[in-house]
Image 1 (cartoon, helix red, strand yellow):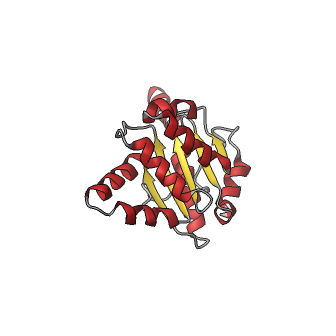
Image 2 (cartoon, rainbow, N blue to C red; image 1 turned 60 degrees about the horizontal axis):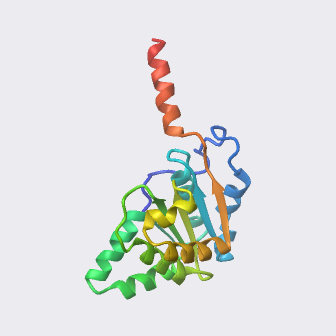
Length: 191
């Protein structure tokens, strides 16, 4: 699948850190039923709240159930699309993307994206709409996506399709990484 992290799982996720997180939804997504029903998922929240960990953990869980999964950070997916465009394989690349049962697009909004990002992501979502499942994570609220991607019309069309049959998980508000750093600082000051 190309996961970034070596061993993310639901077993090693600290659900107690952000107690309001919808555990039932996460465990439901891990069953893979949303893939069988060709539904999508959108994980939103500030950095460090577990979106990437959970997306990869769900990806691993559904692989164990026999589903094929492709994981790409948003900027890498867009680079792959740009490369395919340059080398004349764009049509084939999009055809391959369209049939992967679960495409995980991670960290939308973490990096500056190319001017074609909105159109390229819209094409990905349009080809997958009601045919295959997409799980997308972002640290930006959907209201900011038009500005982020530079094309409000394309973003509106993308969100219309993505959210039509989507499970939305709000992560946070606290950053797990910041907590670890704070815990370590507190531990050092007590020595």
